[in-house]
Image 1 (cartoon, rainbow, N blue to C red):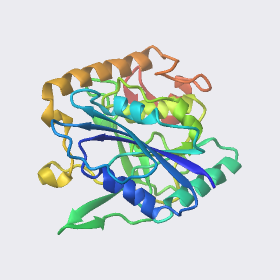
Image 2 (cartoon, rainbow, N blue to C red; image 1 turned 90 degrees about the horizontal axis):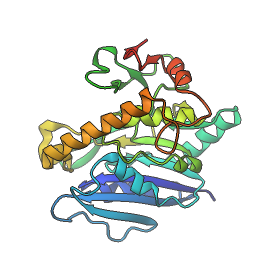
Image 3 (spheres, rainbow, N blue to C red; image 1 turned 135 degrees about the vertical axis):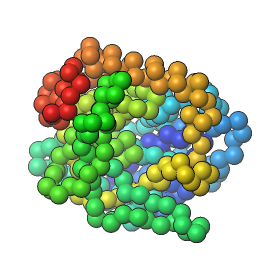
Length: 297
């Protein structure tokens, strides 16, 4: 029996408990699931975490520990030697036997000589008339591509999006922060606590790549995501930092982008930066991106 560590950050998200429960209920039962959670709440703690097994968590009252970087860093601290590692968001749903699917996928790619990290943008779910509705074709997995015209606007963050994988790619250029699966050792690449939100995915992708991991697509969709829709208001079932703390948001976002620029432009290798098994230049050639000239090739 294998074990899976599931890392979950959360900002006042009413889907948090339902996400954990769904992960447990949809799993095969053949693997131990251990959760590491950081919950940051706004003013009043009204998120229910009672009755959850194998869940270790830390709770912060905003504005303490705001931002996805520090939240993932805290959640990651609960890793305890599990065989596999699954990074997700706190508003997720799962396919039946998602754990077996991902482990088999990972081990098969590893048997071919790869050092896999499986990542793709999750499909979408919504609530319609009070009922949960999965929107995407369950077998569809999207490939991550960079968008030239939206990238590098006032910062070093390339804009990435999910596109149809019509060429049957096996590898992907970046990661989705909402679904990253690999062996437990990626816990050693601790999330950079200074990264607030924008830039998280590209930095994570480069860090994994330069630490020697191969960025690969899963064979099938195993996870679904409640994407934020500003027109839905409270129906999104979570608060947003930019609405609750606009000044703090601006300050943290500025500091985060400065940290990202420092790491990339100075090719910073170390605990919060890149690994030394591959170079930044190798990643740029692999992903067809030029950070110094702010260009998608």
